Length: 93
Image (cartoon, rainbow, N blue to C red; front, top):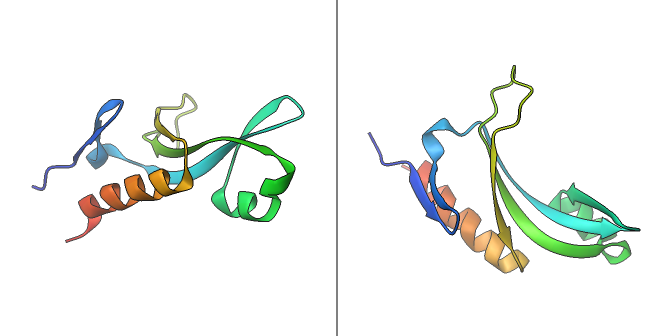
């Protein structure tokens, strides 16, 4: 079986147990902090302050209420995209 351990700046992430993987942008508007999609920021990004870009590894089974996530944080969208490309290598044959 293929090694599914991604070595990140927060430690090893076991991708074999991954349920969802998605990029997002953490924004601030009027003192509120929210996680938004990259598409949303493309449309409305000029109206908010971008705090960081994140790659969310969600290990939470659909029936569970308690979230099990690991989040990698990046300063730029390019850094996020580079990490997404690294992770995608694990899912290619």
